[in-house]
Image 1 (cartoon, rainbow, N blue to C red):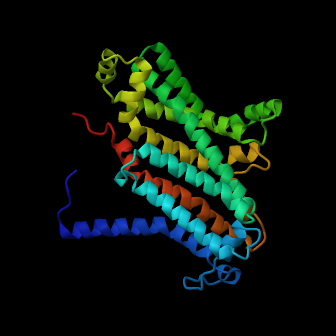
Image 2: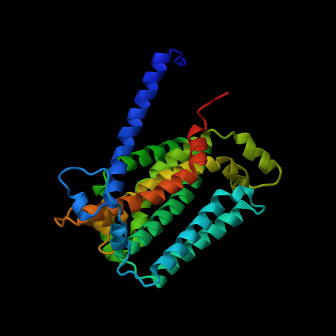
Image 3: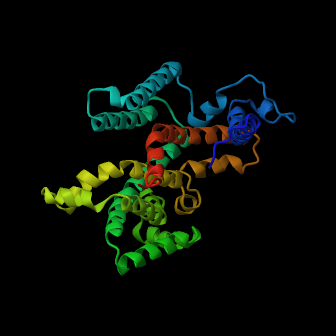
Length: 334
């Protein structure tokens, strides 16, 4: 594709891109603005773009009651989050192995999530947020662990069995969500796992596993066999060569696949709604505010949508470089 050199053409292209960006950002901006409005401003017949913002909607969404030292606790939590995020962002500049830094940050976030309900009286929405983290992390870990091994095996073995497995996985992925509800509901009733995180994780893994296998297999196909063969000549077995040679090369592809699996699990509504009665995730919790007749739900729905979006945006921004590398892997041959 040739580069546009005419000044008028470049102006038109940039104008079209700016309009498309504005079209894409405007819904989220309006939702974010609604989350900071009072009920009077949010339900005004004339849309208000200029108003006095308030944090009451977020306070009512996350807290049952505001403690006397609420400001001090808020500053402490905010400072802890900033320090942990900075630790992740500047990990490459710290003279310690990145794995150790990531482990420390993970433990820090876990300790912070554990401490918050013991410092302040949180609402049910916080519990839904914790449920979402458990379900999403569990789904991603299981899906990527199985998908990496299966994708590697199917990339290296090209017999008839591999073709049958891949076609079966593709057909399984094409099934509608409703096809999974009744079997896993029966499993939950029979095993006593209904309304548990484990049942939701198993169901989401079953739904997303064909996608991870196909995507990871495509990444493994681009890695030359000679790399693992050279490692096995040096004394590695197949598993050691896979973990020490192939996985480091495949890391951007694994992160890309993990992010897509994370989005699928994080945004799942139907399976979670039908397999749980109390252990809801954020998409199901948000639906409580979008279907009610109470006018107060308008601002709470906006605040809950923004609260659910921010963690995903931060994760994508943090792994953006790896995501681009993973999606670009194999795009250029030669």
